[in-house]
Length: 100
Ligand SMILES: [Zn+2]
Image (cartoon, rainbow, N blue to C red; front, side):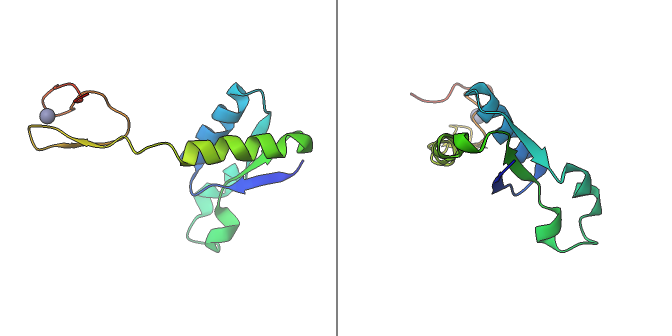
């Protein structure tokens, strides 16, 4: 099982595995169990990693993650002055919809 990529944190590693699974690429998160030891180990030893089940799917998997990394930033400024981030289409502060 080849290592595909190291993720900055477990949430992102899990997201990547989900995205890969949706595309029919089997992958899993490794070193998951070590996240609780952060601080006691060198950072590169506790980073979660995404590993592929099938090595031949690596080019496809990398292309997919590249695409994910290059998505336009969904960040917009609401008329109430709030900066809305993270893909929300309505302001969490006042409920105004994202301007088209
Ligand atoms: Zn607002």
